[in-house]
Image (tube, rainbow, N blue to C red; front, side, top):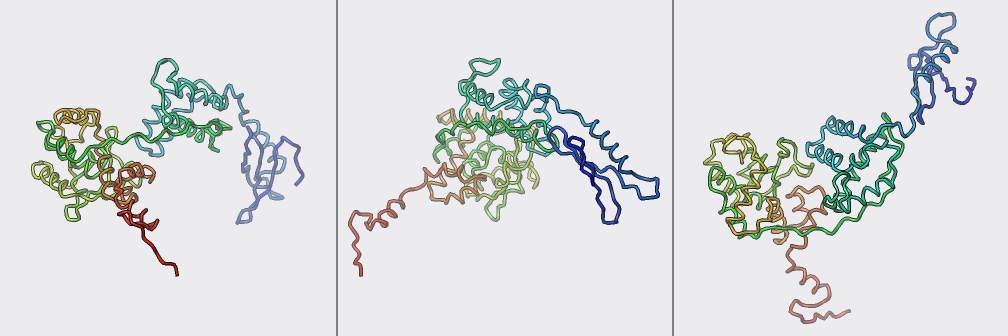
Length: 400
């Protein structure tokens, strides 16, 4: 077929499995290739379908109807794309916590700083300037804001980058490049200290549970949190069918975050955790006095509402219990999970096993507890490696 002049598109004929031939058009618009089927090829002697001339006319009509690319200054802004990105997260079934985190990133820093700019007008320099402002707390419209740490900055830039990936999809092409690809992210700061309670402190905390309708629930909650390592939302979502008394295990199937029940934090978070006798005893006592003992009833059901426990109210009672037990009031409920991690590491539990028990997606997260692992055997291993006894005497070996 004769070659058409540049800029006028191209026509070709394709034959399907039934032997029918169709006209296909191809042209470029706004930097991308467009392909369309125009219709069947007219058979000689027939008046149906398209001749080559008619196919060329239809091609020119389609090319004329294709909107021209707008200047960068007139393209979609970050503020226009952001809600579409969030709606896309919802449509894909992302967890409520993921959506709330994305909205927070947009509302706090990204939109105030870059919202009025077209996506293609945002360059790496703008992203680096935003990162510098975050480091010192120079938030647009809110001077003197709290400076952001390295991890927080990386999270914000990660959200911005995800928006560009969404905008650059072949079905949208609202942006031609991702400015986040050309910036150097700040190095992650050293791992923060892990705060935990000693076993005697856990006992004191449980004994100091606030008197009243929540006392038994709080006491069992504190013991279970410290001796299973379950997250707050996982404990709140725990049901009696998840407590396997025979196998002495607790199975994590759900999570409760932002007022909603859902799947655990990650795929690895769906797991089974050993249930120590002390935990089994506390849960058994709670079960015996509970009016909600059906398999699908919540283990830690709110005694007033019968629904899920309120995280805010839990935190308030936890601080009161800390005060009553004369413990550091800066401790958090999440520190009970750290208590589980540090005690298991100190007892010599393998990091890979501990990762499974705690539901960490990445082993690097579990490695934080490695510093608390027992080192008694390590000295003996090094001594053996260098031919020394643990008592300091030298081991000699005759070489044949």
